[in-house]
View 1: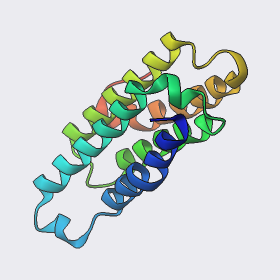
View 2: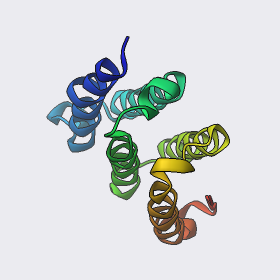
View 3: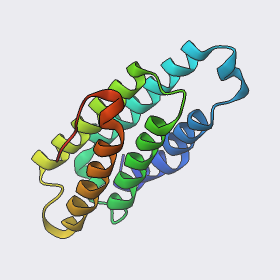
View 4: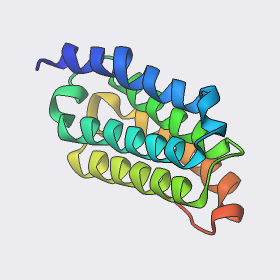
Length: 140
């Protein structure tokens, strides 16, 4: 697939899926375990697609926006009252992996260097907000 196809994949499939799972359809009260599993798998899938196609996706002019939108969606899941410890752990681990791979790949250098400052700021706010409840810290 070409980079634009991956951009469309995020815009038309992954982001709407994550947004829908975030708002939670009415069935979530009937099957909270199934909903949690769906959320975990969707987050892991989005991160796997990002990291597995990083070379192509980072060539997109819209990559910083795409990366920050994924970051924001993951943060919204953490802020949700129904976020279990397992879901929070998966989100934090997935986010950490995305950031570490991007850092090692040199994504935060060069033409999109401003992305590192933005991610660092959001990460600091996220860590402060959630460190008390999860007893863990994420740092860039």
